[in-house]
Structures are given as structure tokens and as C-alpha cells.
Length: 393
Image: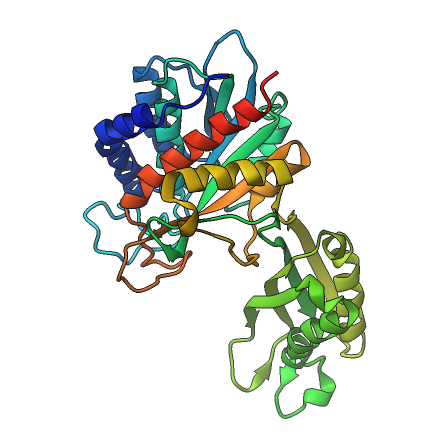
């Protein structure tokens, strides 16, 4: 059985980390959305081809196989590569040059880490099997993982590993947990319509503002009584739009929000329950109702075997004392769809520079320290080889 040579890996990282960080800065400065990622893909493809590897295109992304070209890959590494439609507010010299877009979720770091792991594994004299590294678009819009599955990219893989930036943990700290590590996340839009009119005569209207207020308060309240509280269901509205004048009741209004739940069982029945409650609340207001409910992603559920492989890899890199068990997040992550096809494990990569304040994900001022990248590279490389060794045929 061939094992990863840790000294060779450390040497490779020390010699090439500057180049990997340069790619990270290039991707960070040119954030791209959804499946429209040509600059990002080019920045990743160039060093892979230079190393003699053969990236394969799929919509919005690429993947590359490392190891014996005559052998089907059995283990995968995944990085999401898309950005957010959010202005960057940092003063980094490599800040976004695109107005209204930024890598505020750290996908530039994920891409750089996976790139480094691919090149580091390719530098090893021999591997106990082949590894497929997947650079996936459209995580933020929740379509990228489905595309990976539909394209058959996961078909030969027995296990897939991924890391996600964690600004609440300092550089040098890594985390993973057995079972669910993220939440299911669905999207809904509720449109109410009815007769508008003067605020002096609300009894002659459907009073859309009042009806919207009822939905905003009663839907979360009723969900908390219709679901097992241990499921952690959370309904939060992010936008409410209606009316333009203080003395005019509008004829229509729109609410949008997200429903998040930790339990797979409760998630499966969430849409039916939400529709039932909203219809009941609106029925007494005189307003008409239209609702779009978009199931997003299930929870990411870390497989037992893959979790142990990833945790061992983390301990190999930073020591057992620097590996923690994070709480289950209410954030959604489309890596969950990989878990419908194969065994998966997702880990947390500490990216906050020690001594600096916490700036959370999806904030324009979010900064991930470059120093986290080499830790991520080593962790994914160890996880890949560890998984190959444990499943060696």
C-alpha cells in the first residue's frame, strides 16, 4: 500500500504556495457568478495544464484526474468556485475589480486549496489510486452540484471530500462532525393581491400590509408548533415590498424568505406544511395568494467512514488538539447533493488571522487569510490518499 510522503508534501507546498496564493488573488479580484465563470476556470486550468494534467470541461467548471490514467478515480475532492452578487468593502490590494461582486464566502480559497491539492498529489511519485478534483460552479445559486451529478462526474467515486472557510476559527484550526453538519435550505416567495384604497377606509380594502404582517409573524410561530423543536426549523423573511405612499393601502405585496431545517425528515414535509399554514393565514384577510416554493438543498450529512478519514487527515496536519467538532450550521450547502450519490465529508477550515475581529461569511468585509491555504492543501491531500488506502482493492 502506497502512503503519502508527508515530507515530500511539505516540501512541495513550501516551494509552490506562492504560486497558489497568486491564483487565489487572481480569482478573488475577478469574482464570477453562477455558471458564468470563464476567468476563474482559466486561472485554474492554466497551472493544471502546465503540470501535464488534462482538465475536462463541464458547464461552468472543470475536473481533473490525478494518478494512473488507466485507472478509474475512486476518491474525489471538491471546491466551489463562484462568487456572490455583493459589493466588496475590503481594502485588499487584490480586492474585486467588478462592481457589486465579491468572494465573500471564500470560494476563491476553496478553489486555490483544491488546485494546490491536485498539483501536490500529481507531484507524488505514486498514489494508491486515482483522485478526481472537481471545480464546481454555481454553489450560491444551488445548481452547480446538481449539474455535477447529472454529468456523471461522481459515478466512479466512492468518497468525496470538501472544506469550507470558517471565519469563527483561526488559521491552524480545523473542524468536522459526524452526521449532519449543515442545514436544509428552501426559498419561498409569497405574493398577495387585493383591493387597495385610502388608509382612512381600510375596511373597504384587503389591507395587504396587514395581511403581509400576519404571514411574517404567524408562519414562523405556527411552524414552531407543528414541527419537532429538535429539528431546528427556522423561517426568516429577507424582503417585504408593498406600497409607495403613507396614506394609500397597496393592492399587492411580495414577501421572500428562507426556510432552514436540520432534520432530513422534517425537510421532506416542509413545503406541504408551509403551503398549508400560509393558505390558512391568508384565507381570513380577503387577499388572494400566489406562492412559489423552491426546495433548495438537504443537509450535508457526513458519512461515518469519510468523516473518520477527514478527521485523521486534519489531525495529521494541525494536531489533534487543533481539530474541533463544530455545531451544526443553519447554512445551506449544495455539496449535500453529492451525498445522494456517494459518501461525503465536509470540514471547516479556519481562515481568521489570529487577533483580528470576526467578519462573517456573506459580508462585504470578509477576509480569509492566505495562511489558511497551505493547511487546506495538506488536509485534502492527506484525506484523498487516506481514503484511497482504506478502500484499496
